[in-house]
Image (cartoon, rainbow, N blue to C red; front, side, top):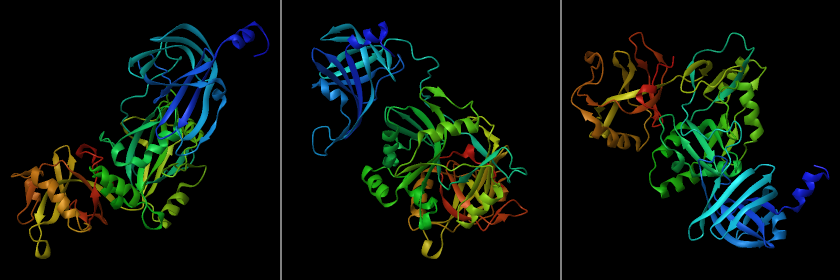
Length: 458
């Protein structure tokens, strides 16, 4: 800045510092120089950029001025134990300083503008941005509908396409703000409580608000995703069960897109442009990673590699395409090594022999314009508890009439029908000429999807 009049004025101003503090709970220590000390507040969600959103500021003890330059690790067991790093610092002007109101103008490298702090109760204060939001700033959206891929084959010409591994998991949109993460499935189910391991992703990104798109997977034998192990984690409600299963079957979040970052929406950018922003985040941790993107390569080679390693397939993505929120687009094409199909459960048949009194097979359908079309039954692939768990869900949904159109398609003996609300997934060998699934095997419930999401995959 030099030694001009502006620089000299800044040197005469008091200093502020914001320290990112990875203690028991991530927060930001906001400190203002005043009367020979650093008056301090702990901000659980950081400094607000949006004047429409106030953030909690917990008033803490004053600190000596030299603490404003501290970065490092406070040993575990000591007060505030954890990593501390300087997130921003600079000078500020005082517009008002009273016991019940502090109004300042900050001049930092990341934070600048007029802010006011005011008490609400006890040590709890609020911090409010008085200036308009920075130019172009937009708050995180509450929801984002994921872009969907179209089933198909590899592009005839690889030029202009990127290829990513298709992971056998559950799609999740993540909203990260103030170091906290919120994850939603395709049907807006809150997945956050089921996967506590992903809190570390929020802590990793810290004060960088963003919306990420990715896939939750649980790895099985040989490091290959195991949908069955993942499925059991999706239905846990008890916190102790969640904690136990997160240790026994840890999940990973594979991130393949960034849709909003640092107050700016990115969905109108091309795949390549969004990819630059995603890679710049450097997402790499015990429970999260950035998905590989293979460009300027043969898609057939990537597909063959996934086949040899037991992976589900690839997603081909046009590199010049925007993110088509909530739409199934031919700009993304999914090519599978395994034939799988999402199905709607329309009923069940009784078991025989050792399965007497329980479920024998599920009656399956696929929604069409005319109604739910019957595509066959599945009676294999269920785990020890799967049949009992499914019956607990099916019995309350029982109905006396068939949900299938036409009714005559179901020729099973003594069928029990249900309202077609549950979605599952099967693996199968081929479609018959009559439109039935040949040799289907049950893979699990898809609680992340609704019947309206189900389409014929191949």
